[in-house]
Image 1 (tube, rainbow, N blue to C red):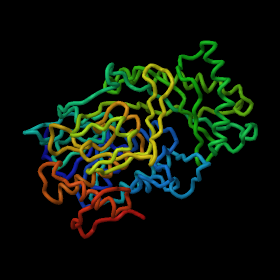
Image 2 (cartoon, rainbow, N blue to C red):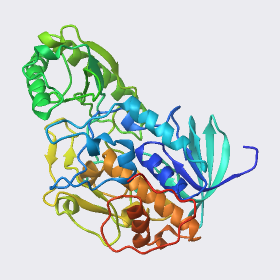
Image 3 (cartoon, rainbow, N blue to C red):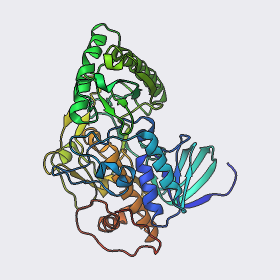
Image 4 (tube, rainbow, N blue to C red):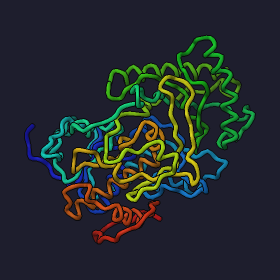
Length: 445
């Protein structure tokens, strides 16, 4: 590959919520940041295989334990929703928000349609990355961030990882979500389907049609119930109700097969629910363009977060993020989902050590690929906690650049928390003041 090596302070692979949050956090500290995305557009799972629901980010008392950039992405979730209303978002609005926020940062470059194909390692560090696609380049940075859902950059760097359930390696089932509009809310038993009571009632009304489909062997979907969520600003529903087994995102053929199977299940379920009077004239607007894969590589880090840590509401001295979402394991064998809430106070800490992969001194993890077990991963994989993880990773990377640290392990959690706290993020533990660039942006409060 010809041409000069391009230099950045920080390079981030993957432009889902973790990568975008990391890029914004670092760019707002005046670092020169490159965000790379293999798809033609930024957005990741939250845009291209949306489930509509904004998963829980509040503790037992209703206090947000994720704020910061997540608040910028989903402002209505902090101000507009009551406990009775289902908190949801429109993936089109989310993508527009992503694009607007990224474009506002002058020190941030975004390369879409481009993939990292090789990582050169030298003495336990990433020396450079080779990029192919719409952009063909060799790039170097002081710090790199793996914001891919499946730990792809860490894998290219030759780092150790775990995949699937402990014991047998099986992964959570995948889902093809789909959007339905044109139904008649007036014909539902509970017309206010945007409330939790209403959406549960709607699901109950649709369930007999799905069970009849299964009883007649007209679908291979192993799910036992119907799950859907309302769009916030239109009469439409997003169904998270298909289940595809044996999908491994590290094996592309299985993802292609999974998308075909998920699309087939979606069309079968839609056809079945049109038997309901409220849905007889409904439209299947689309099946999401990307299969919703819940689990990929988990990179082995300095600390492996466990299910016991989550359910034990564990606190860590090097806390940089928090998660309030339940353990939510979609059965790899197609049986019932395990949904187990976090006990009071309703959240646990995510330690900085879980963002640091073993075997590399200038790489941080900023997506669901952080170091954790199969159980723990099922909880922190949601957008709220991944946004917080990304924000923390981007902040830590910027501190490494500002302080000329040679090893990401040298970044102090107290200093990371100082910056996060200034920006309105939820953190707990001691903070240590550092000098910030004059042009540093603070987040909206």
